[in-house]
Length: 480
Image (cartoon, rainbow, N blue to C red):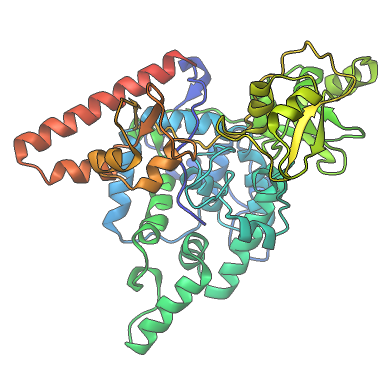
């Protein structure tokens, strides 16, 4: 798996809708009262989480922690980073409300330590549309090949790597396989990040050199060395968020969504309307759809909030609108997009927007395009549809406006980041337009750049980065 992509922002919660979980000491409870008596499954030593009376998922996860402590200074470093980004953690926890109960249920059902339920925090911050430079996608950040290996269909219409249920089950299947292979969770998690062959080769090198083969002694990529400590840092913060000044969104210990079977193709927008929920809510639960149409043969089920299932079914039964406004059209190679737009009575810019086509693209290579359905009102405004643009904004980033003369290479040198990262920040395009804004991530790259300067200039540079990060966070908050 790949490092998590920066995340799309979610709403800031009002203080009355968020909680900081106290420690046993802060709650003035004896240690034995902090975690109620636990049953065991009989198959392993992990607690049976379903038997616990916790009303909050965070409390339930805390009660199921079972991984060994790791003696690594990297844990403290990552704790410090998360503690210094409380707004990031709050938004992460708000996004997690859609998925965390289901993930925790599945982790418990498999007898895994509940730390595993927190893995999406470091993979994607629970952003279902997160994409990495290495083309990893979804809250579990599957790359295409691994996703296909675990049964996640990926086509023009649908990407199963973003499917909440399918990707969760695939990720847990993979982690269980890795645990069976390597014998402990640290190595399983490391292999999840860099691949089982990477860990196997590192262990083989250590065996030849008569060195231990546990996680702490392996010579592995830097990202993977940080991967397990980062998860354990998150674990420590979730264990006692108040200690770190962190506020978490309250997530009730009950199902958030239910599964509804679809019998006919329908517009994504209409499905959200029938359920009486926002598009944002619908896409958060059904992020696998690449197009604005749900096909019966590709997405037989949709997820809806538990309290909206009856509303959806009632409204669907009473509905007398057309269910589909779009259809697929297979172009011929060399056919111009202007010809296609004219044929279906749609503006060229609308056709491009609906299909994610560059304004510089003029001819088809034979691909399938989304066009208005025949019965659709030709006067209807077909809005641009970009279900999951590459997520590029991190809470610690700042926005940069492209100026005349800027190029990918010049900006990469200026901000001391890779050109590949800048391309990802620019939604995968290598073309820059004046005034276009994209996010620069000033974390490790910019700080490393600042550290090479004199103490005075280093302090100034770090101050600018911090001010830019704060302004960026405030700007995002004001737009939510």
